[in-house]
Image (cartoon, rainbow, N blue to C red; front, side):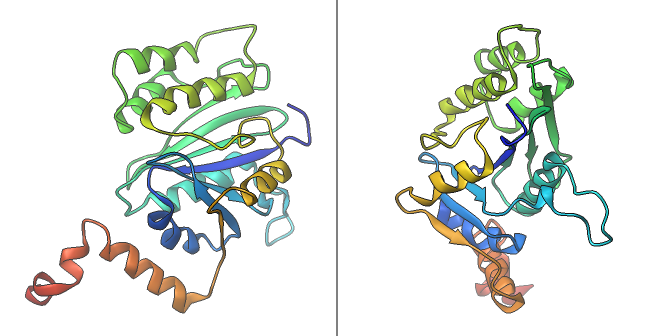
Length: 227
């Protein structure tokens, strides 16, 4: 990976129609497309990790930006959100699920693991992966391997997730630049642009998302009136 290869993806374990309402609340321009039968992928159109803060300070690193987005999407949602990110120095993931503490792992550019093994076990449990075969494959990614750089580590992670039905479109993968990811996502069949539409639409989108979740029966119909 080089200095121009910073990139990021948000993988949601839900179909695009379910992801769309909550994605609006991020107030970021993104491209949304399907990534298999049970997964969707959000590709940022901008590069907020290059922008200076409101007080003119240093920009936030890409992992912090993606972790914040993943957490915001996952809070109150029945489906988990996986943020994948990479830059010239490191690569890694952040998994957010509901109100639970996020879990993540990091590799240096040369593939050296610098995360905690427990993170992989938590990752497997929260995604309902096979506690033997899948966990064994994940734990291999935490061991030294001179032939595997950071990109190879993330591709190994995605190979495990392929067994859950995740299928990223060709060209959407670790090591690609943000510009390349955006151009690939834009030409996918059924891809759509998600952008901030104002507070009124945001509130409506949030209510729609809640009504379609497990809380739905309590915010509409006879149960809502009873409450």
